[in-house]
Length: 442
Image 1 (cartoon, helix red, strand yellow):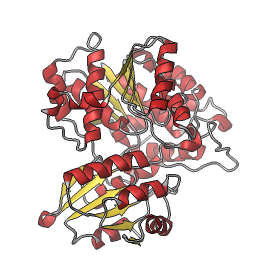
Image 2 (cartoon, one colour):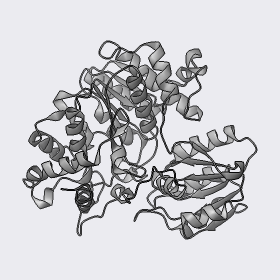
Image 3 (cartoon, helix red, strand yellow):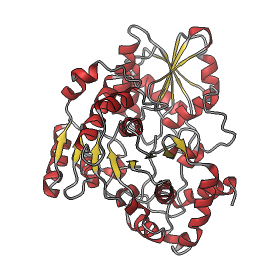
C-alpha cells in the first residue's frame, strides 16, 4: 500500500461517522496486541486549551530528555500532525504500513459496526508510539472523554483544562453534564488535575475524583501569577496560555516520581513550546501583521479577543471569520464585535461550515454599526483585507489550516488532507445525542 492509497482508505472511513463508545477501540487495540499496555500516558481533556496544554507538556518532557509521543486532533494541514514523536510527524511510509497492517483486523468487524476514522487512527497512534518505544505519551481526547476512543488507556495522570459550552448535542446542554463527560477520563487512584473554574463544573469533577480516590489538584488563577512563571516569556500569547502553562507545570510536578524533570528543563520547555494556529502572529510584506487563531466556541473566542485587545490596544483589525454551523454563531459574533473594525465572513473548508451569508446576517444583528460582508472565499477575503495594518483569521482551526496553506506557511504539502477532519454521515445513521457524534467540529 502506498501513502496515497492509505490516505484514500482513511478518507473512506469518514463514511462511518464517529461513534462515541469504547467497544470498538478496545477490541481493535486487543487485535493489535494491546500496544497501550507498553506505554505511559498523560490524558488531557477539556473544552478549550487542551491542545496547548499538550504542547507545553510535550515540550517540557522532550527538553528533559524523554522520547515523547504526541497525539492530538484535528490536524491543520497534514494528517501526520496528529501522531508525532519528539515533534517529528509520523513518516508517510509508516502511515501506509500501519493502514495495511490493520486491514485483517478491520475485516473482523461487521459493516454496521465498523471502526470509525478516529478509532482507527487512535490505534495507529498506539502502535506507532509503542514501536518507537516512547517513554511518555501526551494523549489528547477527541471529544468529551468518557466515551472518547482515547479513553481505553490507563494514564499516569488525568488532566482537564476547563469546561465551557461546546458540542452540546453530544455532551449535554448544561455545564454539569459536559463536566461529567470530561470527568469520564478519571481513573481509580490516578492523580487528577484541572484548571476548571466554573463552580458547578468544578463540583462535578471534584466529586468524581473523590469517588474514585484520585489525588486531586485544582490549578487556580493564582497559579498563572506565580513569580517563577511571570518572569518567563511564553511563546503562546494571552493570559489563558499562562493558565495552560501553569496546569502543565503542575502536572509535571505531580509526576516527578515517575517522570523526573528539573526546574531548568521545565522552564526551558515552556518557553520553547510551539503550537501553530493559536494566536500565531505572522509578519506580512510591508510590516503588516496577521494573527491566526482557531478559537471555535464562545469561551475560546472570548479569551482570544481579550488577548487580542491586550496585545494590540486601540487597534480594530479586519477579522476574517469562518465558523462551523453547529456553533453558537450569535455568541461568537458578539465577542468578535468587541474588537473588530470590519468583519469578512468566509466559508470554512468543511461540509459543516456555516454559510457566510447567514454568518454575516448574525454579525449584523448583533452589531448593526459594524461593517460586515460575506465573501465567497478565504483567498478573496485575504486579498480584500490586504491594505489593513492588522488582519485576524479566526473561528475554526480548519479555516486556520487553509490560511496557512494560502499564505505558503504549510511546509510545502502537495496533498489536500484537511478533508480527513470531516466526515459524511451514513444514510439512515442515528446521529442523536450521546449515541453517535462527529469528530471535533473546529
